[in-house]
Amino acid sequence: MELYTFNKDSGKKITKFNSDFIMARIIQTDKAAHIGCMHVDTNGTIGYH
Image (cartoon, rainbow, N blue to C red; front, side, top):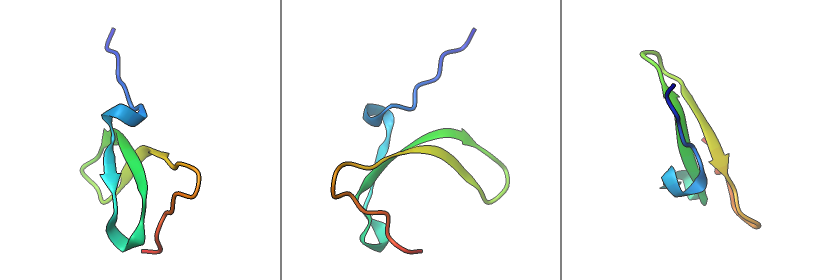
């Protein structure tokens, strides 16, 4: 059995496009896709892009 973690501590702070959140990757694909868990705090922002 393999255990995966995608909690806030394992994520990466995202600040591009005036964003303010943490993205923890769940899986990486060969295609142009991002599959992850977004942790947005109170007053956090996901910028338009």
